[in-house]
Structure formats: C-alpha cells, structure tokens
Length: 338
View (cartoon, rainbow, N blue to C red):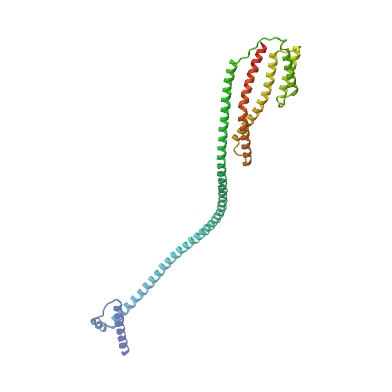
C-alpha cells in the first residue's frame, strides 16, 4: 500500500510539473486554485491527464516530422530550380564567352587590316608630300619662266610694232612715188624728131663701140639673173645682124641702153629684196617661237637689228628707181613698135 501511495504522489508531482511547463509554453500563468485541484485529483484522473498529454505529444511529433519533411521537400525543389537557373546561366555564359572569342578574333583581323592600311596611307602621304615639294619647285620654275616669257613677249611686241611701222613707211613711199612718177611721165613724154642718117653715122659708130665694150665687161650677176643677162646680150647681137647695116638708129641704141640699165637696176633690186625678205622671215620666226635659248636669242636680236637697218636704208630708194625704169622701158617699147 505504501508503494502505491508513493507512486500516486510521484504521478501527482509529474502532472503538476507537466501542467506548469505546458502553461509556460503557452504563455499562461498557473493559479493556486489549479494547483490545489491537481493535488485533489484521483489516481484515475491523473492517468487520463497523462494519457492525454502523451497523445498530444505524439501528434505534435508527427506533425513536426511531416512539417520538416514538407519543408525539406520545398527546399529541395527550390534548390533544384536554383540549380536549373544556374545551369542555364552558365550555359549562356559559355555561349557568350564563345561569341566574345569569335568577336575578338574578328576584331583582331580588322585591327591588323587597319594597321596595314594605316601604313599604306603613311607611305602615300609621304609620297604626296614629296610630289607636293616637286610641284612647288616646278611652280617656282614656271613662274620664273613666265616672267622671262613676259619679257620675251614685250620684245616680240616691240619688234612687231617696228615691223609694222617699217611696212607702213614702205607703202607710203611707194604710193607717193607712183603718183610722182605718173605725173612726171605725163608732163615729160619723150618726143622723137626726124634726123639725117648720114650726119649721125659717126655718132652711131661711137655708140656701137661703147655697147661692144660694155658687152665685153660682163657685169657680175646672181645665179638667178645670169640667164636673163645673157638673153639681153643675145638680143642686142641679133638686132645688129637683122639690120644688115653698119649704122643703127639712135632710137634703137637708146632702147638697148635703157634695157641694159634696167637689167643692172633690177639686179640691185633683187639684192635688196633678198635682204628685205630675210628680215621678214626672221621677224616671223621670232613672233612664232617664244621658247628659244638665251644665247640664240641674243644672236637673233643682233642679226635682226643689222638686217632691219640694211633693209630700211636701201629698200625704199631701190624700189622707187626700179619702178621708174620699168615705166620708161614700157613706154620706149611702145614707141619702137609704132
């Protein structure tokens, strides 16, 4: 009996402790009335209270385990999702890395090409700078030439003006002489009077002797005019033979003298014409050619000055004389034909 009572007391003491701890867990305070009621409980009530607490504990344990398992499952699922996401991100990172490698290779090739182009451009720039220097030197040389050509053009202009003045003077003098010679010819026409052939025989013989001496003298002529001179002399001899007489008329002798004098004047005229023509040819060459060496230009200018002086002095007077002689010869031929 004593054992039973001791056990009952121990059960009461355990129940009191479990109740207080349960209340403390539930944040409740234990009153004195509740403690008194616990002491007054019968053993059966104590057993039932213990049974209820134990069953509650077992339920709680199951719930806890279930909750833990569910929590673990949820965490596992979350972790799996995170792993899948991380794997996807890793794959994307790998793909991006590969793309970056490809881009790096492409850009490296482009950089090499650009470096080659840069070197080519640097070379071309250097060549262009050299060409610029050469062109600048050429431009300077051309400027110097242009200055020299300006001086040459001024010289040519002066020579042309001198040539024009020379031509104008010749034309004026020729026109004036034509007018004067026409007036002199109209006023001083030759008059042929009748005369006795016997009285004039001695004079005719003297004139014949002078003509023969002049034929033997043979004046010096140019290559072009030698044939003309010979034909004139032959004409003179043919006229003597055709007459068949020792005497000739005074008019015929005068005509032959006029022809001979005209031939000499014509030779002098040809010489002057050659000098004048050489002058015009040199002036034309100087006007056409502006790019001749300096040494040759000095020689040409000196030759031009000499020829200009010769032509200016001799051409006008010789032209006037030749024209007057030609007119006299023309009128003398008309009179002999009559």
